[in-house]
Image (cartoon, rainbow, N blue to C red; front, side, top):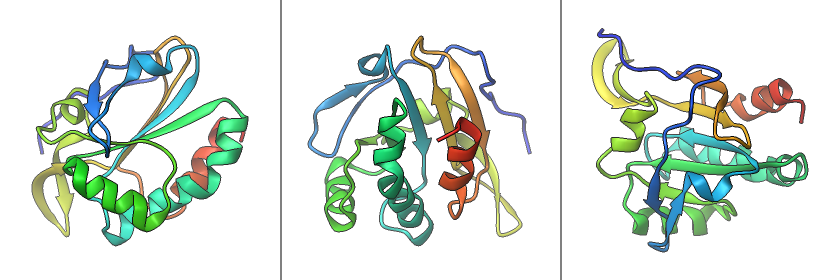
Length: 157
């Protein structure tokens, strides 16, 4: 497997402007002054991605109260994101990165092992971006189940 660009704690978070489920543009700079959890997932409405999104949904009040917003990013089209949001009652922005350019900039797209084979795809990743736009925590190749609980412990929520 080739080495891809990976963000590390202290790096500047790459800026993005992506459409949400309604087609409205959401930018990382919209969150300047607040901490934001940015997570990348492979596909809306799949079992692992649904579990992870619902875990974020169920923890959102505590995360928000502690000063953390949440944004999910996948390569899905906005219409699929809207369906996923509505089906699961998700109350945080889901953004569409159809060309995977943002995922690539964040090191969340590239070669990965899937059932023992090396494939190109979305690398399930989560980042905590501080109020100044710097990476406070970078987590790659995470598991969907139990991830949000671990993240909450790591950030003290």
